[in-house]
Image (cartoon, rainbow, N blue to C red; front, side):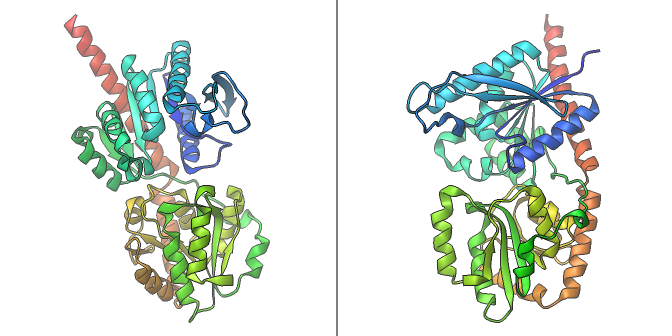
Length: 403
């Protein structure tokens, strides 16, 4: 019997660096283990920009990675600037060719703003069910571009099923497209256990004085790092501390962040590692006294789950999955986003109470192992796929009944 064929569309996939790529890779492996044949189509609009003056035709290269068929799609470059509609037209054609070759039973798009529209259009034209997965910025940021609003609403209305990584995102989508309430589910990302003892101690750790307060990731506007800079600068007048940022600021915002660092007057209390591998970033976690994730909005960030597994005392904001996963005073401390004052109070509280840090960290690890285990997410995805494929079967039955 032929396997059910799934085509997932995404902006990134390993070895590309990014949380969406990690999630898609994890889910693809889950689906393979369940018995599905999995294809992943990777494309991103920034790939249409070629700065060296070269030209190319549209292409799709296919490799087999750990049992997953990975199709990397590139649009043509025919002029100095490839218009966005030309990019999506090329992507649509390449996806259509893949569908004609493999005859997919279901499409699944991650991140609506780029992948959702072209995937949903192709799926609807071919009477194939489509799942759209909202990750965060698609509804927290891109929805505020008036050009995107109608398109996002159309995608939500025409999905067989929609998934969210937080109830906040699900609620916003239901406001935009009320039918989402009847065909959606919200559940968190998962994380596999990590043996931190096997990771080498980064040399920088030995050079960091005082209480080590840290955060990790690719830092950008939504991460709320300016409030962490201000809070640590203020506290450095009374506490011996180091603020360690594991990662770096995204390139297009670096001038802004340099300004924020200077204005905070945090000085040599701040250390930034620069871009690291995931393994190196993980190796820093056991050496942090306090992990802070001060996001203004953030979906379900993997860095939170990693810090929980590392038994860190965590301060997070009451946004998205951060505020849903952490229970204030039980396995972390919660503050309102954008509040430097609340962050200062929470940091001061944890900095002076090592026993509390240990208690919160142990509880966070227990929650990660029990409620954020891959087996939990696996079952959630199996339920979603069965619902979406079942919807397709019901529609087909209704059509046959009318003949």
